[in-house]
Amino acid sequence: MCKRLVSTGMPRQHSCVEWEKVDGAFHKPRRLHLEIDNSGLFPCPTPGCEHEGFASKRGCRKHVKTKHPWYTYFDTKPKVCNEIDTKSTVKDLSSLGNKPALACCDVNSQFGRSFSAWLQNITGGGKKAKQAEISVTRAFKFLKYCCEQSGEDEPSLLSTLELVDYFLCSSKFLTGFLDYLESTWEIGKPGRLGYVTGIADLLDFRRFHSPCGAVLQNFSVTDVYIKRARQCLAKQMRSHWTTDLDIDSLESRRSWATLAELQTVIPYHSQRYKTVLQECKKKSPITATDLTFSTRFVAVLMFVKVKGCRPMTYQHLTVKMFENAKTNGGMVDQTIFKTAQKYGFNSLYFDEISLDIVDDYIQYVRPLLNPQCDYLLLNRNGMQFQKLTDLLSVLVFQAIGKYIHPTRYRQIIETESVNKLDLEEQRCVSEDQKHSSNVARVHYQKLRSRDVALRGRSCMEKLRGETGKAMDMCVRKLREPDSDEIDNDEAETTAKYAIATPTLPPTTQSTEVPTNSKRPVRFSQEEDKYLRKGIKQFGFSWTQILNCPLYRFEKSRVARTLRKRALSLKLI
Image (cartoon, rainbow, N blue to C red; front, top):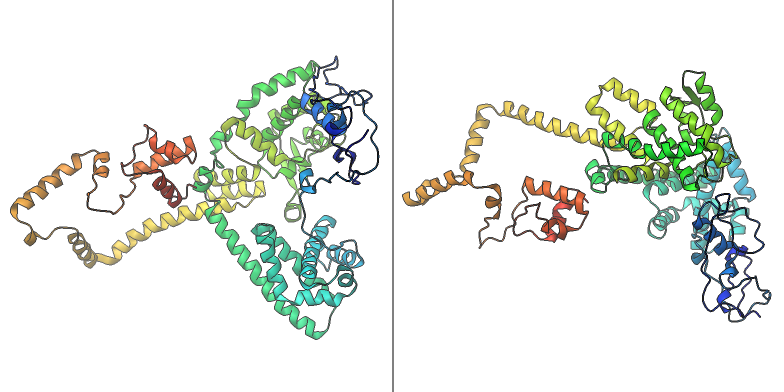
């Protein structure tokens, strides 16, 4: 009966039976014709399936593909043998979507448990259990790398702490591990900085147990290399903030918007939410997509209308907290969020309109999600909504076509506050958002440097005095032709050309290039404006920008020169 079957010990949905090659299979795979039932759900077409039904055809097809893959080629599930055919092959883990992870030593060993307990102790920093687990894992990945490079086995490493001290004392292993993270695993600078912190914690843990004097002396050398690694990575991160996170660069990637544009997101989606809410009040059948949209809309409303805070604030907002706000003047105080250790609490203020809208969501929309917890924002399974960053980005992109996440939204608020608020109000906004924006800081530095440059120039003019004016006159004469080297006719021609030149249109001036000269023609300010508009309209398609009749570029321009100019202007 069975031609091919592989038993791999994997979950049933990942079995490698090739049903199309089993005896009695259809010549062509079955097409699923799904129909909605009286309850508004799509039932599973396979006989004997006890699932209640799905809200969408996509969910039903996915269920059949993963739970009943035989139904594509059979009416009833065939009986297959349990013997492994010699011709059968096991699917690679990468084909199943499992992403490989960096090798790590056993964190549940005696050494790993003592290290984690020390990190959670007061002397080890008083970290939470999750933070301690992350630090232990990162440090043990470093030890695993050292074992692979030195040829030592893991059991002897965890049982003999002298090997741990040896690896920590070797700067070669530390440098090689950080290079390995960057080159092989492509881990960014913040991630590598986290690994350096984990190794430093392991170094402090071993120093806590008072090894011999020679080991302590070598530990001090490792401290120097760890300090230098932190300084180097921090310097690279600051450089990244200055270039890639510059506002001009973000605008070229459609990752920046004005606050006025973001205020149009709620009006754009309001009519759809109003329709869904009315259907919920009438207790009409509602699709899962509309329920998810309602959760997204309420979350975006709180980001834009209530407070542009960190996503974790709204993620851990409970129904009980919101109900207490009705009797507390619209104020919600909570302590479960990312910056709780620094600020101790976070307060949200709901005005009357926000209270009414969120209350309607709790009364009419949230019960349809079958709540399994007390959190306010739920996913389709009735559990806590986890992906609030993606949630905001989806609705914003649908409304204005730009990629804005909560962190970028707070950066936009803080950056625009410099133009509309005084210093005290700016500090108040930053403190209320629990946010310190590197993008805004770089923007402030750029504006300040330009202002300083202009004021410094005027101050230098005062310092130069009369001698400076004489020097300026001498510099201007360097651009004037010598009267002894030209005759009267040439002087008249030069004077006529000097008078006629201002009357020519700008495009004519820019296109007159000497035939014998190979020097490139500089881009004018108008061409830079056309280039910015073209990028916003066509993206990075330089040929379309160049051939667009709305933009007038110099005749010698080609697609390659537009790209080079965009690079110099940091538009890409």
